[in-house]
Image 1 (cartoon, rainbow, N blue to C red):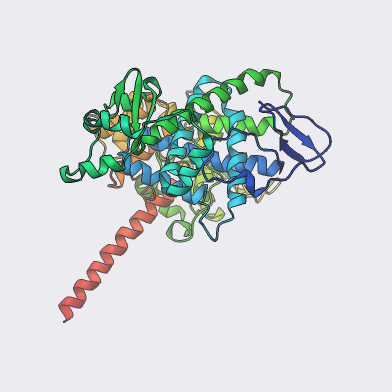
Image 2 (cartoon, rainbow, N blue to C red):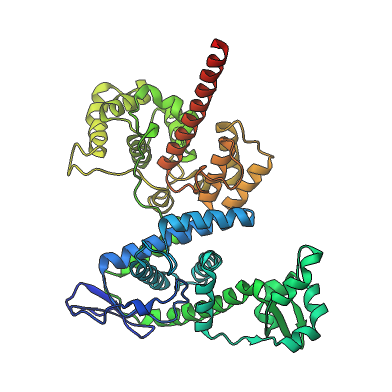
Amino acid sequence: MFKAEKIGGRNVTASASTSDVKLHSKASEASTPSRYPHRLNFYDRPPVLDITLEEFETCAIDRLRVLAHIESLNHRSLPAPQFSAAVATYVKAHLPLNSNSARSANLEEERRRDEIGHWVLRLAFSRSPDLRARFIRSELSLFRERFTSDDLNERNTFLRSMKFNWEEVGPTEKQELREDLMACMPWGKESKKNDAFNAEKWNKVPWYTVPDLIGSRRVFVKGGMAYVPNSSQISLVLQAYSARLETALELTAKNLPRLDEDERLGPVIDHLASSFLSGLAAGDYQPADGTSGAAVTAEMVDDLARKHFSPCMRNLYERLKRDHHMKHFGRLQLGLFLKGIGLPLEEAVIFWRRMYGSSMTDDKFNKEYRYNIRHSYGQEGKRANYPPKSCQQILTTNQPGTQDSHGCPFRHFSPDNLATFLVSSYPTLDRSSAEMRDILDSVKNSHYHVACTRVFEVTHGLKKGDGLGKDGETVSHPNRYTERSREIEADRLGLVKKDEEEEDVVMAE
C-alpha cells in the first residue's frame, strides 16, 4: 500500500496512488477545503498532502485509542443505547469531527487529522486477516456513530455524492407493494401508519447485500431484490463501506511484502499493530489532581492495596507480603506503580525495607536494593523519570516465568488459579457467579482489559457497562484503576458527610 522513499527530507506525503508514500523535502500540493466537503468519509482517495513524522504517529495514535476503546465496548456486550452513548462520548472527547454548520471548530484540521490517522492505520492493520477483521469492525462502529449523529442535510448530500448503485422505488411500485412493505416495518401507532408510509422512501438492492435486515425480517424481498426503507439506510451504507474497506485492506496486504519502508516508519507501524493486538492504546499515565494525587506513606500502602489496588498490583503486593522477597521485574512493576500513586522516595525506602523484614540485614538492603529504588525515582544513574507501567507494557514485555510474580493475572494465570486469586482477594466475587463467568469468558477470548474492567465494576458496586464509572472507560493502566477507585470512595464519603451535616441541621432546627 505504501512505499517509503528516502530523499533527505523530513516530511511524509501520501501520493495519489493507493500504494505510495514518499519522503521528500519539497512541499506537495497542499490540502484545500474542497478536499473535505463532507464530515463523513469513505476514504476512497489517499491523501495528497505533506505531513511531519510526528503527525504520522500522533494522528494514528489518536484514532487507535478510539478504535481500541470501541473494540473494548463491543466485547462488553452492552445494550445498544448504552454502547452508542459511550462511543459518542469518547469520540467527541478524543477524535472530534464536527459538521459543516459548526462555527468555532477548525473543520479543515479535524478532517485532515482524521484522514491521516485512518490511512496510517491501514498500513498497520492490513498484515493479517485477524487484524483486518478487527479494524473493519471498529471502523464500522465509528462510522455508524458519525452517520447517525450527522446533520440530516449534510448526510444526504454525502450519500448523493457517493452515487451508490441503488434503485429507487417509484410511486407506482410503492403503491402496488403497499401491504407487503407496511408489513415489514414497525410503524408505531396505528393511526400514524398511513402518514409514515407516505413519507417513507425505498431503495431496491440485491438481497445478499443486507443480511442483517434479512435476518431480522425488516425488509420485503421480491425477485432477489430487497426493498430497504430510508429509515434502515444505515445498513446499506455500512455494507458498502465495509466492502470497500475490506477490498482496500486486502490490496494493501498483497503489496506489503514488496514495500521498502523507511526505517523511521517501520517501528511506528509495528507499535500500532502490537498496541491494537493487546486491546490497548493508552499513553503514559498522568495522575489527576485531587485525592488520588495526594502523598502516600508507607503505613497507608496495606490499606490502599486492600481497597484500591488493581488485580496485578494486588497480586504483587500479597506475594511480597508473604515471601518477603521479589525478583527484579516484580519490584520494578510494583515500585513504579507505588511511585505513581504518590509514594515519595523516602517512604518508598521505608516500605521496601519493612516488606523485606528479617529476610535480609540493613547492610544488604542498603548495598543491593536502595540504589535501585533511588534509580527508579530518577535520583541515580541517568536520572530519568520512569513512568509507571501501563497495561500494554505489562501484557507485551518481560513475560514472567514460573518463579516470577510480575505480569497480568488475567493473561498469565491459569483459569483455576485466576478464579482462586479473585475469590480470595475480592469477597464480592463468587466462583460460581455470573460475574465470574463474564470475567473468565473475557479471559478465554484474550480480552484481558475487559475482564479487569468487569472486576472493577463488580467490586465497586457499578452496573455492567459502567467501566471505571466514567463514560464507560476501560482499564488501560493499573494506576488509573487505583485513581478511579480512590475517587469513587472519596465521592461516596463526601455524600455521606453531606447527609450527616443535613441531618444535624434538621435536628438543630
